Every structure is written in C-alpha cells, then in structure tokens.
Amino acid sequence: QVHLVESGGGLVQAGGSLRLSCAASGIIVSINTMNWYRQAPGKQRELVAAINSGGFTNYADSAKGRFTISRDNAKNTVYLQMNSLKPEDTAVYFCNFRRSYYDYWGQGTQVTVSS
Image (cartoon, rainbow, N blue to C red; front, side):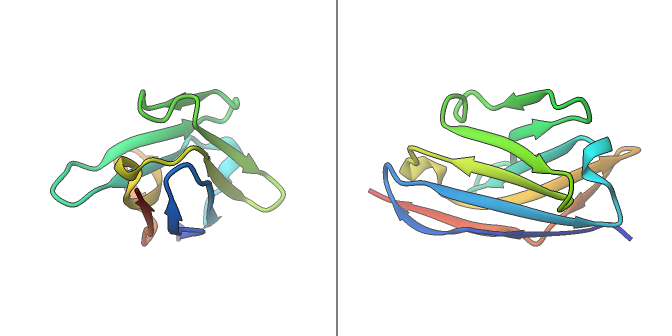
C-alpha cells in the first residue's frame, strides 16, 4: 500500500532555509510524478512543486527561484529544498502521489517562518 512520510519541517526565521523529505513506500518515485502541496489556515491546498518520471519540474509562481524539488531514487525519497523563506510560506506541507485520479497524501509537516 502507498505510504508517504514527510519530515524536515520546523520553525525558521525569514530568509532561512529548510529541506523537507518525503519517504515513499508502495510506489517507486522515479517512475511517477511526485508533488509537494501546502495548506495555510483558511486557504486552499496549493501545489508548490512537482517532478515527473523524466525529471521535469514545475513550480508555483510563489516558489520559483526559491524552492527546488528533487529525488533520490536509491532512497525512494523526494525532497523540497526551500530557501529565502518568507512568512507567507508558513503552512503544512504535504507530499502527494496521484494515480487514476486518486490522491495519496502524507501526514504533513509544519513549516513556520517568523518575521
């Protein structure tokens, strides 16, 4: 069964960096599109970054130039490197895998950026 576990969140000051990890089981990340979403209180869940099986990446406009999605195929893990963090990046960040229009989610990891 698909299982996604996020880690790496925490409290950082504006301008700081975090690297989030998504350890996957039940799927092979290298042959699937993997996504990072985030959700702030009172807001819709938002796609932040995606990487497909060919290594092509997409980013939300708010993340471009600051965030980088990558994967380690040997570890079957997806990463989100977040630099130059802003208070508006504060949210719960979720790893996501979609198959046949069904979404699989991790439990989420909290990122809080203080001003």
